[in-house]
Length: 142
Image 1: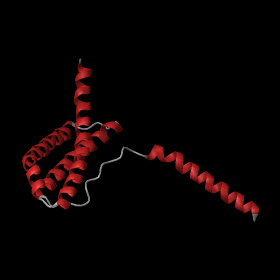
Image 2: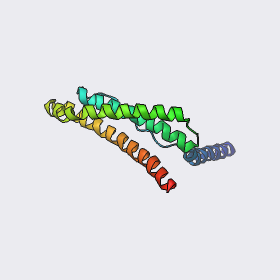
Image 3: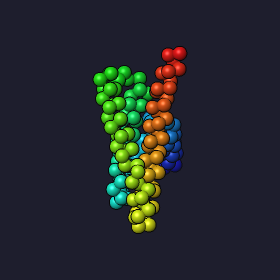
Image 4: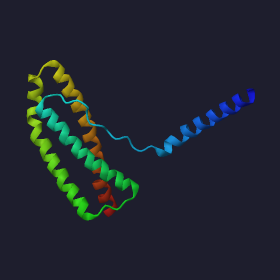
């Protein structure tokens, strides 16, 4: 019995070490998830929706580029067109957000603020990724 307990403990320890050290090689950059619940303020919900649509496009392109996959020019042009439409949609929603939040009840204001903070993180990732690709290509050209 004592022999089996030692083998069992060593086996569990070995599995734990394998799992612990191998998770780093399987992990990828963490994707920001959109908010689970809407704030029930239309302009905020539309802004968050459009910002995460843009984030999804930039994240996919960034993931493909990091993996070394060559993105065809047609697909890249289509992504740029859709990204421009998403940015235009964001600009259209911006003016009414502050007024709509201030007129809403306190709990909706809190939820809207949390959702806007998540969209801010997504847009920050988009900005940094796009800046890295376009500024990086200009430096290489010089």
